[in-house]
Image (cartoon, rainbow, N blue to C red):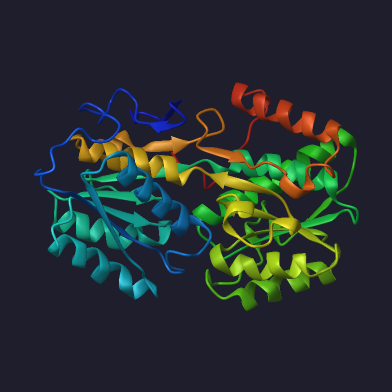
Length: 354
């Protein structure tokens, strides 16, 4: 059985199934010690996508800060064709730990890991069969459920929306949770708030088919706004900034909910953001790299799954919207979080990690 990550010391740490002793703060190594190299391959969008690539690199940097013997590198993928050569490049450089970021990298990571069984790999937002690939997955449906409830409680038009970058599990899991959160609000309040851009039952909806081009994100959100949506949650990496920027420039016509990493810390559009569905990639990556640098062999069956309970997923503070979100709604969201953790409210998605 996989040891699910648990909350400790402010972040995710591996469960008892992980072998080896956790490194002490600062690393405890001599200046002459050989550097432990942690190397990261980004998905398309690059290191500054304000989303999952950015947050994964933040985790790499945090591990280096905690252990001075760690040296980190990264290379950006401009297209899916870059995955295999980028991973191979780091194998050839004899990196000690190679992190692949994004579910789209599953096939390339599997192929390279199978060809290099003694190489330590890790994968964000995916899981493959090879035992030398440590998976970091996140049940973001749980946190997106809370965001959907918030959106339903905040809308003035009675219509909210979400759209994705591509129709893949790490994207649709957000959209499923968001839609269900709205449905739960409707059930509890006898309301009829509509969700545009995604139909959970049919698994069909609106997509940019891109994680980079902000004009594509704006194009999709313009359509959703024209249909009446006044709150939009893009799940499209950097492309989603086309929505948040337009929301900020809309004069309050509509607002947005960001994903992956707190948008008020990662984008310039905080005034337009109600909250963020946070995926705690930084702590997961940091702890995995520290474990590996400390001598632990990380395997596929030791992978982490981030949940509300272990702080692997969450919703961010309301920031500029704090005074606008009614106290009653805030209290309901807090209680809903505890109900999800307790299992009295079930959150389901076909894309949930197993």
